[in-house]
Length: 370
Image (cartoon, rainbow, N blue to C red):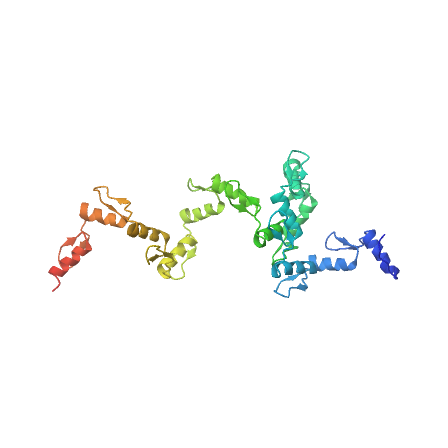
């Protein structure tokens, strides 16, 4: 059978049963897993069910349930070893499985899994299985005993119970302390957070996304302008539910849940609160003029300054005469003083009134200064 020999009949017997005959007599009492050796069963219980993380990283505070994950963590996070090199491009990966996915999806576009019901092809067996179950069979014979959910496979039901009801997060990230209830979520986490793989490119622009759902939201909201989230109070509609919620709270509900820590003011959104704090309390003038040393608290103020002072853009036109101005306030003063003759500056010493503050000051110095 093999080259292993032992003077001990017991050891030889265990080798034959465990390796060659695959007799798994050590059954886990918590799940359906079984093992050929008691040591493997013990390791399984400690790692999966008891979550004992006795393998500690010497570089950081991370700990793991087995030595393999610790080794991968050390190589990927601390030693930065990406030993799996792509033969098509300069990309390299810490795990062989990620390299394989990269080559198949990016370079070879291999869709080797064909649907037996239609002409669809898929790059992964998981994708084919999900397609058949969702599109063709739609059979959900495995019913959850805790809620009303049902599934097409027993494995999916098991994952549902462990992830939703028991909250068992047995898929641990080798880069950080995060753990997940499903392998797919762990894969998305590693590719998106640590390896920065965005494998869903947009066909309209250069954007790419970690998940297909995010790509779909991008296309509908940015390119197709599909506004499927409609306001029940007015005719407004939005591309995202979050934008609809912000609209209802800000416009209809007037819920001002963002409170200023300096004064009693409150606002419907964080942006307005941030602008208020920067302009009134912290006096943060982070928008600097490229022509002079002036700086402003908002981009609007900076734009008005550049157009009025440097570019001399007079976009505010008087409707009565040919005069034009760089600011709306200047146009308003022009109309009041020249055309409407509004005397809003009153002398406190006599009954005289004037259209401009400068005229009032001259009057006061001339007649009442003594």
